[in-house]
Image (cartoon, rainbow, N blue to C red; front, side, top):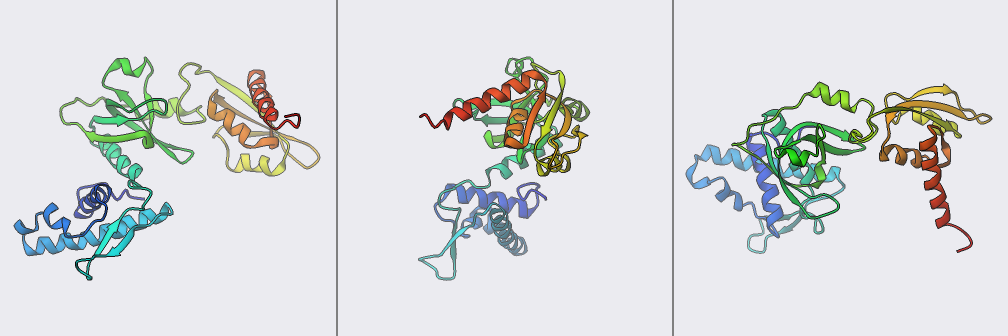
Length: 293
């Protein structure tokens, strides 16, 4: 689906302006757009065109919010009963943050622009960077952008860094930084054996992971909606006999989490290190529910 923030059409301009006004104001009256788009100094036809797109933009925002289970708030104006005041949801003043950032990042990749961005890692306060976005990907419903920092030291010696879109606080295209392009084929190669959002550059080796399935429904699910494109069946699963599957991936936290996600339905057969790791986590979890406590 097209990003409603993207492009230079009047509709996209109006969407972006609605978003700005809704984030900075308690309530928005459409009169504010007369000054934003300078109605006094444009033709009547141009003004009417903008007014039309302002209405369309509001509908587009309302529709996108609905897809997130949210809605715009509206009340009659106290000064003019013909007007309606509009606001974002009461407890979410920036509900379309990800869509807005995605539009900027996508444009930067398409038009080969570096970004000046504010990034907020989970473990400390936000930080400022010049970042060259080169590739985007969705993993488990979360958007990620891949690229390199302008400052080589910030790249920590790895080919590229991975940033979740929802942790980018703000992003603006630069005009005076020479863009460093990436290679889509190289990204595809690096991600080929990855289960998760980012390659394991410390341990890039690919391992054969053999899983024993103790539930036919889980077995079929792992084949119809595989954890990874390399998943294949070794032994079918039935009510009388467990099945086995194999996949070739790098080690990762996401791999461990996916295995644990299926609970008693999946057992790691090999490699031994992964089996021991999962067993250790299960043992700790079991201790949380010990009847002796």
